[in-house]
Amino acid sequence: MSSAELDPGCGGDHCITCGDDGEPMVVVGIDADRGLALCERAGGDRATVEIALVAPVRAGDALLVHAGTAIARLQEAPA
Image: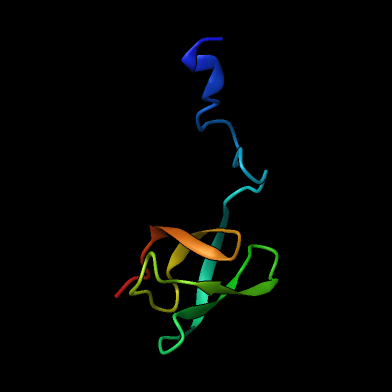
């Protein structure tokens, strides 16, 4: 078996480790002391998200969230 066959790599539309997709969410509120943000999905559902990897954030920022953790900033809120 070649090394390319042993390494599935990253690609496609989801995480090969857990099968989850990254989900775009918008920051609604922030608890900076705990490193958390209340974020909202496009459908209106809300969830608490860890923001350490993309901090600082502010209300209105669009984030890519995977497994309850913001992994990238999609767009900053206008100043």
